[in-house]
Amino acid sequence: MTEIDAEMNKQRQIVLKPREKELPNFSELLLNVGKNQDKAAFADIFQHFAPRVKSYMLKLGSVDEVAEELAQQTLLKIWRKAQLFDPEKAAASTWIFRIARNIRIDTLRKQKHFFDDDYDLEGIVDEQEDAEDKVSREQKSHNITLALSALPQDQTRIIRLSFYDGLSHSEIANQLEIPLGTVKSRIRLAFGHLRKNLHLESGEMV
Amino acid sequence: MSIHHHLSDSTLGAFTAGTLIETISLVVASHISVCPDCRKRKDQLETIGGIQLKIAEPEGLSSDALQKTMIRLGKQELPHVISPANTSSLSSSSGAALNVSNSEVPKPLRAYIPNHLEDVEWKPIAPGIKFFAIEDLKTANGTLSLLNIAPGVNIPEHGHHGIELTQVLKGSFSDEIGRFEVGDIADLDSDIKHQPIADTSDSCICLIATEAPLKFTSMLPRLVQYFSGI
Image (cartoon, rainbow over all chains, first blue to last red; front, side, top):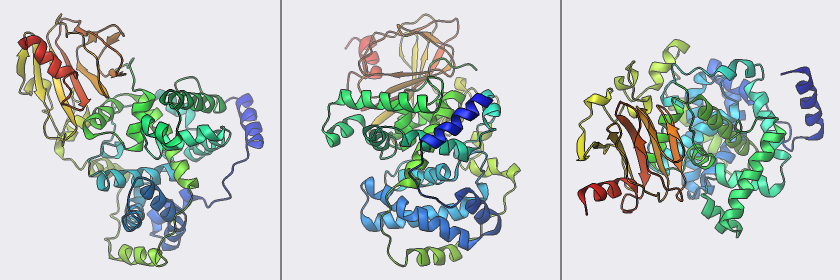
């Protein structure tokens, strides 16, 4: 990152105040669980994420008891896998999202999933990665949070429905009562804005 | 391997959200395993997923949820001590097949077909075209197959209904959109019609996943229809 970029980053962060309130450092908590089987750290992660994993499972059509059970299973898996958490490879929230999502596919969809942690991608070297890794994963995640919070509400909503709630474009069109074409153009617009907010070249952010 | 044709935003987004059917999902994973760009875009989408999860509205848990989880946690085996060097063998739970080197078969696919494409039990379906259906994967609403196209052979023009993904595993083909080489993926909109031709002196081998196998407009049935003169 050049000095100019760093300065622009700083300015952007002043302009775009995050809407999230101060949260614990989940990376540190996860590392603590992994290294020391720290139950207090685990409880902190549980307090924040278990109710949100439950809401994630509910949104995808699960009934209350199942959603609660899957939230517990997700947190148990976090406990079991915490030693594999590597803050250089993923932000804590990204890592937790992956675990919750994979449990959802396994259990609610009764399907196999094919995500990376099942295949170590030997031989794949990402040349851009080195330069970029000076910015930590948590920082990247934070930058994306800021960029997201700067989007108009209808665009944030459509990104959430599409890439988090997992609705198809036509399901979104039905839910929001807008034409399919509007869904598609709104998604394109949202990602265009995200790229601009993140100062990314076209194509780099989806 | 340099990749020129990538996954679309919506396919990658649906993969990341975990809403694709298994057959399509496997081809996406197979492409990502050889494409750093799509892998990076996938990571970015998962980062967005993580942010959404972190800032989501919480849903009330039963009052003893934490206590119950703590009890279950006590009953679990303590985490194994894993040194970083061992993590890869630990995570590839699908068995030894995944660890073969020098295979032209992308890793996610190795649990389902032989490690070398010449060992596949090809079935001739038309002059210059051989076919292998991958049936191990639960495919209630989709098909997954390999297509082996001899040099110079043309696939009849066809359209697509639903998602159809094609990844080149060997050789190359060309169509109205461009030239597809090893690792490239054709992630086509349903309104695109094309007429691919294997365009090198080698056979072109592709991995193809479709939704809704019963639609006769999807590529493979059309292909069989075309050549068998139905």
